[in-house]
Length: 266
Image (cartoon, rainbow, N blue to C red; front, side, top):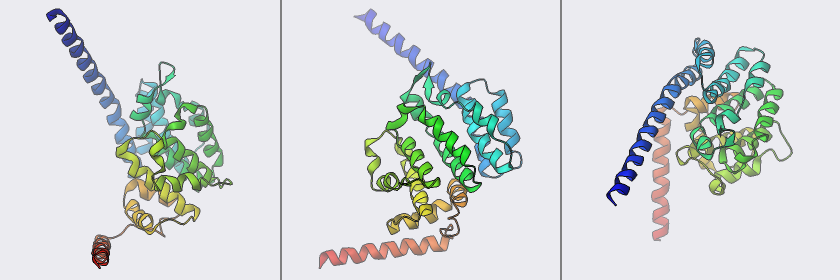
């Protein structure tokens, strides 16, 4: 029994050490990637060169392609040809491991969808529908991701921006009503994805509850929200609120809640 116990403990120790080494390695790759997209959101003059350097120096295909998603946005912004970047972009390298779809990789790299949505909004703003179509085609080649919220949202955004017949409205509205529960998703990001959904509905001119309309003002106050809503040309309609405006809305909400409580008592 002691031999079995020590063998089990040894295996556990090896696994923990392996996980620690893996996490440290991923942190090293991710650290520069994060700095790249921070510069991109801040509209830094050095963002493009830093992204290109990151892709060139990165050895892992997974991170090279995460970098290409950032590069695509900056190239459109600069008015450059994106065909080479689109041809080199391999999304399977981001979501597959050893040639097979990996649920763990999909969960780990769900953040790339944020930049894919931003890429799509920028493409629509610049009428680069070839880029929108190319991104959609690359995901059509990964049907294994059909059961993820991020993928369903991407297709709905594509339909809305390309003004397809259903305009993705059903999926977008369903997400706001909790319809995402049947899909896999990362709980800490679902709030952000719902904001992308409400922003896209606002772009489409579809009706939605006042709560989500008010929340768009908060989303506009973030760098990601400001960037997405600006390219959808709805930022002026839902501008960021000043601190005083936010305070007034909070007071208004509190008063409304108190009035509701009084009505319930009656």
